[in-house]
Image 1 (cartoon, helix red, strand yellow):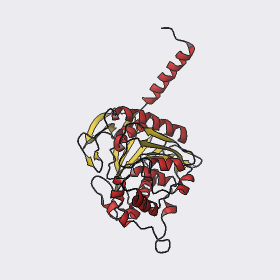
Image 2 (tube, helix red, strand yellow):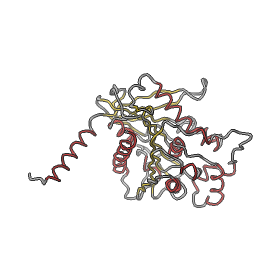
Image 3 (spheres, helix red, strand yellow):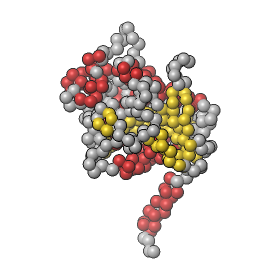
Image 4 (cartoon, helix red, strand yellow):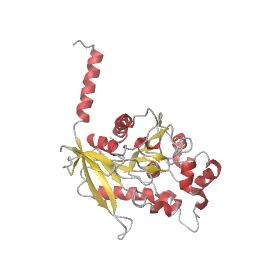
Length: 342
């Protein structure tokens, strides 16, 4: 077969990339990390990590993982990636993305947010102020635990600034990782938005319960806004994030590397109010629109119908291939973290 030099070089590059991509398999294990207080419930965390052990597909409720359960981790990982699911979600809902990162050398810590998961929705019932304050704190506590764990802390690559840490989140998880990067919530923005735009952003505003939202008093209640940032988080990806409550000033001050995804047909978090608001105010806008996609395009397709405020989580618009999209997205997020963390 005759190859021109450019074509030959391109073919060799493709082979090298493919060889690197298959250097590891994905391992999986579940751990428990401490809560905010000694008597608080522990947080369930699924760890996806690089291993040389053989994987197998294991069904876990409506989702599955393709990984070596309990496989021995490799000695070094590129970085720790915190993964935050959306409202009432699960640590298993983004397994395709987590497994891809693991196969490419990353340790992914996907937490089940206490009080905001498929089994327990009590956090949102405590009101938006508690909800939007606590979610990033839960994520930071998981980072604390992993970086202190003797089984992992020596494996995570570091530089002169400390361990390499990134974060990935969807929906409310997108808000969570933006807050870790320094974006600040202002509940008065949410209240004003839902008073003016409830008919155009109905699902978000029905969940936000704007009538119960009151801005925190700087006198009676210490403001949580300045303490949600986690300085260890150097790069984030926010997929269809809850964004309308984040202030323009705080978004402009974000210094972590960022990438924002929006689903073109998102009805759960209408992009012009959320993802596009976030991206338009970041110092280095990096917005990717996913054509013909609904809000749950970023999640694995469950094996059964799961109802939500926006219909079946397993459903897709006609012509949208979620599996193909997730495979491409996995390549993109791996490339992003490789570029920004390594």
